[in-house]
Image 1 (cartoon, rainbow, N blue to C red):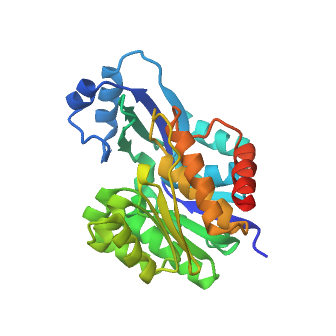
Image 2 (tube, rainbow, N blue to C red):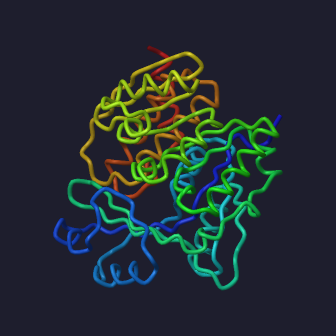
Amino acid sequence: MKRILLTGLGNALVDIEYKVTEDELKSFGVDKGAMTLTDAERQHEMIRALGSRDAHRCSGGSAANTVIAFAQFGGQAAYKSILGADHYGEFYASEFRDMGIVLSAEVVPGAATGSCLVLITADSERTLNTTLAVNQHFSRDHVQEDLIAQSQWLYIEGYKLTDDNGTEAVDMALFYAKKHHTNVAVSCSDGFIVDVFGDKLRDVLKRTDLVFANEREASALTQEHHADEAFRKLASDFSHVVVTKGPQGSRVAWNGIEASVPAYAVDAVDATGAGDMYAGAFLYGVLHGHHPEHAARLASYASAQVVAQFGARLKASHIEVRDTILDSAAAK
């Protein structure tokens, strides 16, 4: 029996979240709702322009957010990444220790830890400006074979495919996963990953057991314009598929079982981390033996609650949410 149920592989980023106006967002010249790779100097300029207003800080990164959610629902989890030797790196590692998640992250002397400036407008849309910093140096040499061997599932974020080092690291991780019979889940992460790095992503997906995509990503992957048609195409290619559709809910396929789950209506505040939360909650449910529809209901509820608050972490008790939603779903 493998000792770790889920290990994530992705960027280690300290999220720095600000509420901004539409005019402020336009002044930065970034695409609303998208993730833009930004150098450290430009990110510092943007932060200075925001002045002394309050900012929320937490350890993150897409795959990290999913692993954190999975662990806080009660799953055994680990995370593989890389950190700089600075106060952000110390903050990041301390949060993982406090959450009881195994963090395998080399600290690189003289390097800066990655960060993500999250700009949130009044309509709850989040616009990401990411400085990868030391994450750009994460290579195949950092991939830890024994950690993957000890894991039942490996979860990889599509963001790792944005540079050659990350792509080679993902290839090595997939090699070890196959060697040690570790299942692989991959998140498309962002529409621009499909648009710009689609060939790399499709190659990775050929070696994947579970695909996570939102409707925009699913349509780009399959060249189907309707989310349900995209889901059907993905479900014909993969035994495990999740397609999220925002307010229209989600569709899942797991070992021949398909389910459509409605979204939970909330007053949107901040969409940061909603997709990552969905993945973490769904994985917790199905990997702990719950019916895939019930797991999807947990994921739908938890992600909605994240949208209804500020920040990517669920502020309510994960255990209470888990037990309430799963017990209610099982009783129907």
